[in-house]
Amino acid sequence: MATVSSLPPPVQHPNTSSSPMLQPCLEQLDEQHKQQLQTQEAAVVQIDNDPKQSPLNPCPTHGFINKSISTLYRVSFNQNGSCFAIGTDCGISVYSCDPYCEMFRRYFDNGGGIGIVEMLFRSNILVFVGNGDNPQYHRNKVIIWDDHQNRCIGELRFRSAVRGVRLRRDCIVVILEQKIFIYNFADLKLVHQIETISNPKGLCEISQTAVSPVLVCPGLQNGQVRVDHFTSKRTKFIFAHDSRIASFALSHEGNVLATASIKGTLIRIFSTQDGTLLQEVRRGADRAEIHSVSFDPTAQWLAVSSDKGTVHVFRLKVNLGNQDKTRTTPNFRGTLAAASSPLSFIKGVLPKYFSSEWSVAQFRFPGDSEFIVTFGHEKNTLLILGLDGSFIRCKFDPSSGKEMTQMEIHNFLKSEKAS
Image 1 (spheres, one colour):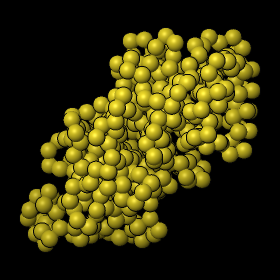
Image 2 (image 1 turned 90 degrees about the vertical axis):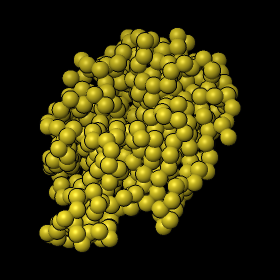
Image 3 (image 1 turned 180 degrees about the vertical axis):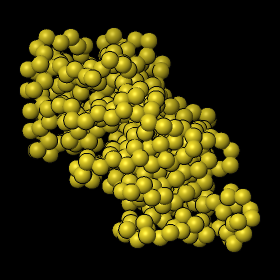
């Protein structure tokens, strides 16, 4: 269970009012959400009027990351891939993806580490969780930060370490080792909690554009995924794999789910409505650790990154407009496989490997760091982030099946851009 407390009034920093870096770059929340945040702030203040909190220092110039950073803990895209945020042993920084540029940074006086940083689209609201040898906040606290006010507006405290956080405009989801808590953003009231199997990676996804929120998380057994439809109060358990779930992604509308196991060879796509297996694609034959899975906004393409140093893009054949027809097709899975391989006519003789659906494009990372991937706003483009500080934009041609073309590469941990 969590407790909620307020945080201190705004701290006036000498460079805040004149700093040119942030406010013009970020979109404002809509009026309704502003009112919700004001309600939230009032509710929080009533709970605790004497919290202890260290201020963040605004960066006075629009430049590169300070070289004093020694550890990069986390990189993450926002909900629509327009920005990304990094958590370091000094604080946090936020970047625009298109065009690539540093938007702002927030460093702590005492150099406290931030292990989780999540953005709410391009708004002024961010969420922090501490990490490292000198964490700025305890690992069992979620700090809600309003960067326009330059202060914390809420805090959620738990009995164990926070493994992950997900945000929607109307709710905040906090992932612990074996529990997930969902809160209203308007007043930080707990509305739902879920028990899961051990989930040290903090796996959880929630739909962003659907009117009815759809949340996906690990179930209570290895290989099982739980799907919650909150408006209709329906829960569906999907046995996606024989082994433990390593990664999954939810489409923007919340109607399609892609899963990968710790084997990392197959990625399966399911309907979240009834758990129907819609498609199965193959990353490779060797075991691999899947680092990220991502849908494009139309659920036409799926990108997968792994510790093999590659990103694969798969063409999806999911009929989103008529899933009822899909459900009534008795051999839908077999039909997809048959359409994908010239060897399918001897499918019953050769191993399943030979009738697999393969990626239409690939990209090989420089180095051996961990990378995550999402789709860019430009057609057929990918954005790739690495824990080595790499930001890569590349383009794929689905008709050629060739390697992707690198369009640009930067390193946000160095004072000069990589060429």
